[in-house]
Amino acid sequence: MINKPPQAPSIAPGIAPAMTPANAPGQVSLVGAGPGDPDLLTLKAVKTIAAATVILVDDLVNEAVLAHASPKARIVYVGKRGGCASTPQAFIEKLMVSEALKGENVVRLKGGDPLVFGRSGEEIEALQKAGITVQVVNGITAALGALASLNTALTHRDHAHGMLMVTGHAKPGDPGTDWRALAHTARQAKLTLVVYMGVAAAQRIQDELLQCLAADTPVAIVQDATLPSQRQALCTLDCLHQTLTEQRMASPCVLLIGDVLQGLASLGHTQEAVLARGQIRAM
Ligand code: SAH
Image 1 (cartoon, rainbow, N blue to C red):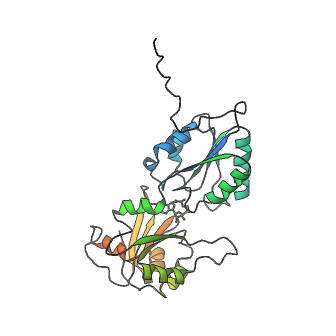
Image 2: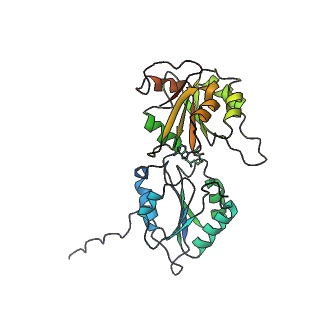
Image 3: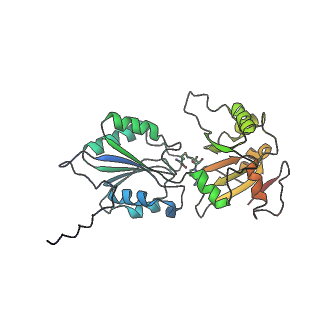
């Protein structure tokens, strides 16, 4: 008996093929597009994007990743650009649900990792409530992309036992992060602070952190991490806001705060081993 050779699957294992209303309801994949450099997409992200019939593209996604999309896929931009109002979250959730119910294979493409400050928690809840299959495909989060570009680590046996990822932007009506408590914890537990969406509130973050952290705590600011337009500056905590202003740095930026960043000074980015208090350096 001759065994038939197994047929090559038209799509990689583990990736749901595009579904049609005839065979099943669609599904939604929340896919991380990484911090900017399109080469940082995971293979699973590439395969999932290729299988999509509808792609909802968020703010901060490098459009170059759409090169992996099928020419037949419908692309919908749902992020805000150039100061325009963003598409309301409720609308995006409704759109994902209705497209999936029509049998579409929906990809919601988000910057960085979908599970880091990406409102994926709300979206997963909404989709599950509607009975829709959801999968999450990780991406490289901005802070880790920034760190790799600086050749540094946020943990180091001599300086930091861990790191805390915090948002500088609370939802309306929420008092937001207790920066003073955070600074206290970071100091006591030797943690590096990683602040996303921190540019607008930088002065307040600086003032409140200074109540518990030393003025000469090193800070690295990285804008447009992993993109050709990437810029970074090294300063001390008491100069955080001043550095952003003087260096004309703007969102998207990650703020990396803690003694472990002192290592940057000796990693070839600057000549001096130690950053003096009040010093600012564009790298
Ligand atoms: N899910 C994303 C974060 C979304 S919140 C992630 O995992 O990276 C948006 C914030 O992410 C921005 O305000 C900024 O703080 C940060 N960010 C996203 N892309 C960035 C980039 N290329 N460089 C620096 N910061 C970035």
